[in-house]
Image (cartoon, rainbow, N blue to C red; front, top):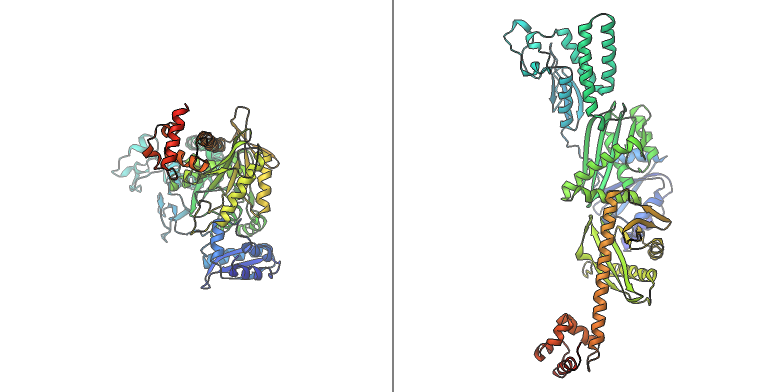
Length: 613
């Protein structure tokens, strides 16, 4: 720990245990991070303790901190509101920042005798009515198209004031029953305005509200014997029901709510938002960041910033996982909305299906930007959910021990980065301190040596162990997990460790944890990923074991030759690769091997001439 970090830690330990906001500054006094805490002392001290267990983003931030300030508050709620306000004001580098550079879209109803419904990119003071804003232009286009079809409103710009007296001819839409043709007087102004108002109700309230209003209107016309008008309303109801049937896949049974999902992969975070109004998907949005962080904190910062600038806050917000300071956020949103706002994390039913659909869209966004397949991104995200990891694992290390009755004891380490094998980072270990067949002891030795190499590595002396994994997987059960966890904890590391359990046919069956097992058969993406990792680490470890056995066998043969010890035998094998090539080598070729003199070369040829090997 350098002197700067020691000084900051000493200052942090003197902070009060009150709630408040802390403000991190760099060497120039510029604010680079703002956070909140229930206890300032506990939270800020964590930054300046051991850096081993911090995420990469936090380590970078801490390395740039030169000083910090703080503001005391009376409650965590006040700290939350103050934090969000200060982030908006100073826009610190290491906070999640929502850029307000998205183009917004509106539904425009013109202010004229025969109003028209159009899509608009901006609101102007022209007397028109605007519905919005929406971030999705595709939704606006689709919503307008549906409204015009259901209520048979025109898409053209003809003059309707003359009606039958004009020289207009009806367009194709009239003949395919998609327009009421006011241009040739097929509908009165009163009926036209009625359709406009119905369309506005539909655009504002969705299918459920419109159906309810239209049914009341049809019943009223029937009771007053206006059967022709009742029939026209009935046609609108039929058209609306057809639209509703097609949209059941993204309906919420009349609820107005937002669905938010976070996916982190490849050093990126993607947040997808589905907005439902009266059961109908009315808008969607996405934010992508080139960073990852603790999922609970990321959700907390996002939700606060997203709704701080919105007036249309729903009463229900569905999230795909836990959020930091949930009660305080609910309190803030309730106060702003004027009605009770609930943040929920669904576990089953229709709400969970909506979350999964939202997560799939977030994963697809990251996949496109990373050039990865959707399955790879979704598998890592699903794995993080199953294991309750704070962030999606980018860098996974897997270990396997290989031996025969305790002889030629070796281990293999494979690395999967962003869901794919990173073969340049694979490592081989020859077990040194464990004699006999002791897989637990062997695994502990390997992990200890891996940590030793990490602690001694520097940027100048790169050895391939410069970073810690986000997740460690062991080929074995909970006994392996417990043994390795004890090693990690004793050395101050908090790296998630799980085992990969096989069935009696040597196929992946479950994930082992210290208290039991987690079934993964029903999670197809995770099952495929874990199976691939387990198969790869087993292949790599057993391959090394066979190689070592072969070398040892050759050593045994070659060390029978006068003057050849283990070192020279190894040099011969490295140079010639096979025993056959050594046997057939000329004296000249044999002397090219380091340490092999002319006399030794003669001994080698003499041995193979006298012994058939």
